[in-house]
Length: 161
Image 1 (tube, rainbow, N blue to C red):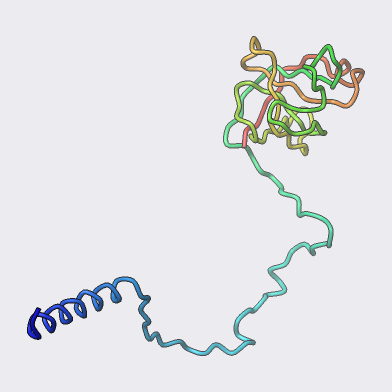
Image 2 (cartoon, rainbow, N blue to C red):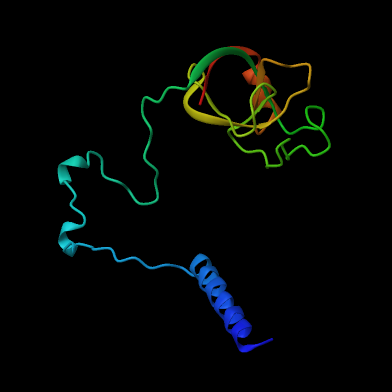
């Protein structure tokens, strides 16, 4: 290889290297920023705060309505062997039962609902399933069998969020 060919190869290599570097390496830009004095960053209108926030509590949502409202037959169940499978305190979604657990086959896990005619302030979360023969029905988990029996069978409006 003579000198001319070597020079041509080096030039080609340099051009390819420059193109690759341009594609791979980050580019910087110059952007002008304006200085904002610290006192102007946040201005709070004291009149905008209607209700003071108490530490350790969550604000209550008032007058929220569900995306849709339907009427369903609602029953109650407890964690007794005759009403559940072999893991009575574990729901079909894998969570542990708690007040507010709801079983429903026609809603997805995690769906939030409310029964305004039963307990208008309580939000229930679908975390469990019922026997497959129950389609448009809901089952509220209760701590004792007595509470579940006392609840009985009711036809209630269900707000679905």
